[in-house]
Image (cartoon, rainbow, N blue to C red):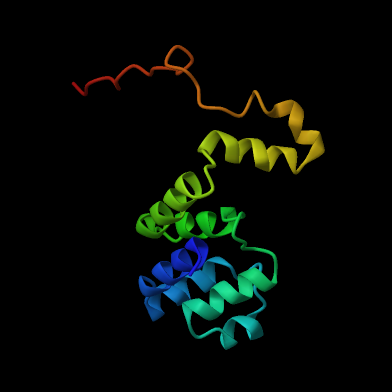
Amino acid sequence: MSEYTSLLSDLSENITNEDLEQLKSACKEDIPEEESNNITSSKEWFNYLEKNDKLAQDNLSYIEHIFEISRRPDLLTRVIEYRTTVLKISEDDEIDTKLTRIPSAKKYKDVIRQPSEDEIIKLAPPPKKV
């Protein structure tokens, strides 16, 4: 069993039917309703995403996004661990990859980064009520 297959299997085991409905809802713009109704298990959901180029062994950004907006940090953490240990892609590399897919975005590569401590604007505490 490949590490990718193992990852999907592990994720599937941790997705309940209720979770699946929430995940399908988060994808409603990408999965037509009639297709969504036919998906009854997390394995079917992963298969659908793979067939429609939303998920691949080296492209996990879509499910990372779905797990993030579905408030499933546990699943998101597993995907990120796979990406950083198996694929050896860090968060910075992921940003680079996303930007290089859009030719006009390359010029913004240096703009999209975490600010340094010096660049962060510190706000004064709110005034105390009298």
